[in-house]
Image (cartoon, rainbow, N blue to C red; front, side):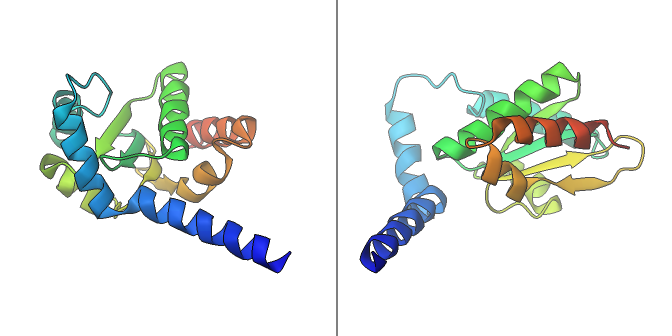
Amino acid sequence: MKKIIFYSLLVAGISLASCLSKSNQVQAQAQMKAASGCSSACSAGTAAKKNAQVNENKESAGVYYFHGDRRCTTCKAVGKTAQEVAAKLQVPFYDINFDQPENKAIAKEFNASTSALFIKHNKSGKVDDLTNFAFRNALRNTEAYVAKLEATIKAE
């Protein structure tokens, strides 16, 4: 039984490490460049456009989803659900790939060096970090994740 737990934790650790590993991100970049046309929300054109919007108004309130070039299933679920909730509540959603040079400054401003989710409020300027909650619940307890996200966005 101890071996099963040990190997399960080992596999989970390796999976997490591969999700965040820089070398895997470099390989993913090469694969993406080799593939024909990326139409995802994190493509260079869309990311540059989103970054330009953020840089025009550094005080922009909204939902900030930070990620790297390579994202695991949980990372994708966090971003997709956050984008859907932001659209539902008519709040700006910023999909920011921190691996792209033009996004380094905004990632540094939020101290986002790994996948992260922040809510920046309009009136107070307060920033809520929902990263841990989002990654724990995006796949396994989506209803709780959505409820917390909505409540945090609506709170001022």
